[in-house]
Length: 433
Image (cartoon, rainbow, N blue to C red):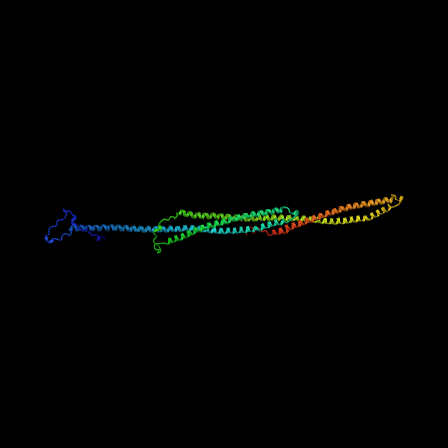
């Protein structure tokens, strides 16, 4: 470097006149050779200055070299430390991301399993709701069939009251099942939304994990690195670590809340299905018991009516025979009456004093009176017998009508309603299984 430094040429015009060296005159022989020459003193000074400048530059270069080596070493050490620290922080970050990603995956899987269980309960609710149509059809059909009763049996008895209670209970159960089913549908939607949020967060963390893992694998010997001058610039959408942790924690807490709500709803579904099925079967048993009791009452009443009808029929036969006997008795009195009246008629033709009221006349008169009285009594008794027979016939018709009514009621309650009620679903079917 010093060899490249040129010493300034000496310019005599810049030196004051009093300082100009006075050279001894060499005569005309040296004329024209002194104008561009330096003096030894100047040469010496120039050489000293050059040496001094070179020494200074050498020393400065040594200092710069030492500083450069120290700075390079320090920069290399700092770069290595920063890179090592960055690698360690990336590793720690990978562990954090992996931990959060695992929590998100577990939460999503847990919600998925819970959603599947809730879907099973939803299907049970749908099946149970569909099953209640059969009991409702049976109850309404029973009520419709019992409208075909007639006469005194068309009564609002305990059976009809229990059937009306059963219809109301079934409608209440259907309303409850529909409400619970809608809650299950809404909860399944909320579970899926929470699961989707966890999956999106998991997907972001999975992608971030891959990128951070790739960054952690970069080293000074990596061949696929390149300059990205704008990569160190802070972006507007970058969040801090606290917000990052809070975001995932909020998602996990929301998923946990929906999980607990889903578990509670499943327990509610179990209780609703079990209790409604038991209530329906209990009411069905009450209705069946009322039907059996009513059929027993109808059977007993029908037996009593049939027994009484048999008695009335027997009495009708006896009364008809009695009437025949009375008629025959009246008919039998006709001949003696004609005989007595003929005797009196012909004896009334006796002449003069022979027409006396003798003992035969008195006897004949008494006989006619007796026979006429007997005939009157017999005819009155015959009238009463005929009236009694008419009453017995009315009783027979009434009894036969009541027996027909009881037979019809028994057919409706026992042969139609109770037979139809044998198709009533079991507790398991009503529970949605």
